[in-house]
Length: 254
Image (cartoon, rainbow, N blue to C red; front, side, top):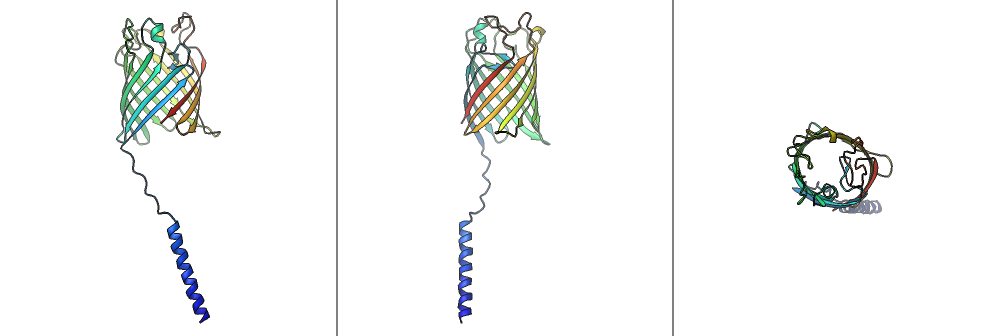
């Protein structure tokens, strides 16, 4: 009898333990469904707004921000803006750049494809040749590298008879084994149709850090081979807007 009671007691304890374990172990969570779309906002600041290697802010700091909407189908639209100086330096009357863009992204056999259009808008810029510019672009990415071709279908950034200008951009991004840092090398070439004096090559090396919760920072070395005698891209005081320099930035995305 004692052996029988002991066996019954052990069986009860085992059953109780199994029930407790089953209760304590959470059911495998089902994978969260992909949202139909994402909407993100960003704000930031840089010590110098460099675009394709040339300072847009007269080598001074700039405030920036944008909104991005992406659908799970691959289509996306967005807008981005920055304070600038170059329009006023060129005799115009605008201190902000507003970019409007949209396109489609997909992946084919491991290669990322991105096609779209981008409109650079400078409100009431009042330059002799309208600075507003529209480009079409196509980009491919594989692993850490990407190659992008942008083609202007209007005059580009206030240059007369410059429709058909091109920009080719070769970039990459590598995760470093220290402190969650990334390293992004870049080289690009801007051709100005019918005005080769203003064509040039730019390059940069950017160190980035994601601090989490939407906060990130960057430090970039930027340089170009834009003409220097005479200066192709001078500031009002005669400084070279395409000269080598360090650019620090911080951005918050939410």
